[in-house]
Image 1 (cartoon, helix red, strand yellow):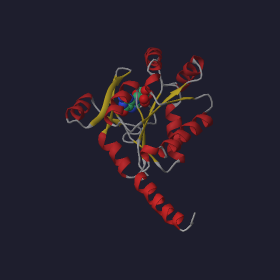
Image 2 (image 1 turned 45 degrees about the vertical axis):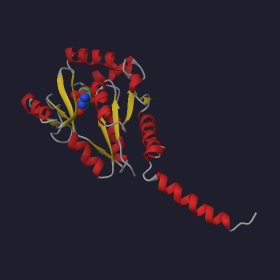
Image 3 (image 1 turned 90 degrees about the vertical axis):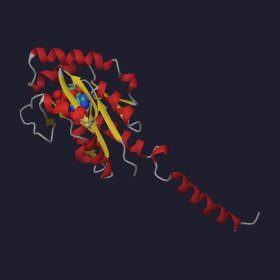
Image 4 (image 1 turned 60 degrees about the vertical axis):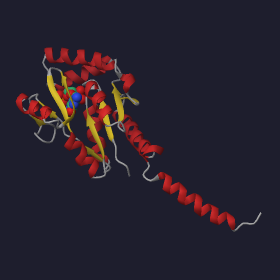
Length: 213
Ligand code: 5GP
């Protein structure tokens, strides 16, 4: 297998984290790249599992040391993908899946052009707002920032290879799973395809030579 990065973007509240977590739990060919952020952990979030929670100074140091594959300010906080986290998963032979905002996705796709970019859409604005309020982790001004970001993010859908509407969780998981499976057999990703086909051609020619016209 030729592992590749899968970038998942969506406005907060589209259900991206749930879809990603479910795929990771169900598929052994996937690994997660834990991002860095300077935002505070939410209740229940674990450092090194959900994010590497860094101070602004630590984050800046990693940027300066060129340790990040991409980084961006999202909702007023810094977020970034560690090159080492991506490489560790790819080296283990698994596809690496990550949650990245639209600015980061653009940078990441330039650095890793074989990436698959998937945008998850909420089925409606009502569902988006309800999911954000239901989380109960956002105050009113945070909610407003997130809705403003959602508006900006929606305008970037064109940059993505695939768009999945999260109208029903199981269906969305199945669709993203199907994308990953289909992309793994895309012609350009099949390892040593030329040799494989060449081997088949040679064998077939030998076989054919035994059939006189
Ligand atoms: P949250 O704080 O709700 O976990 O994530 C907020 C936003 O930050 C989401 O849109 C998420 O995709 C984005 N995000 C999370 N990790 C990264 C990252 O490593 N890089 C970038 N550019 N965005 C990220």
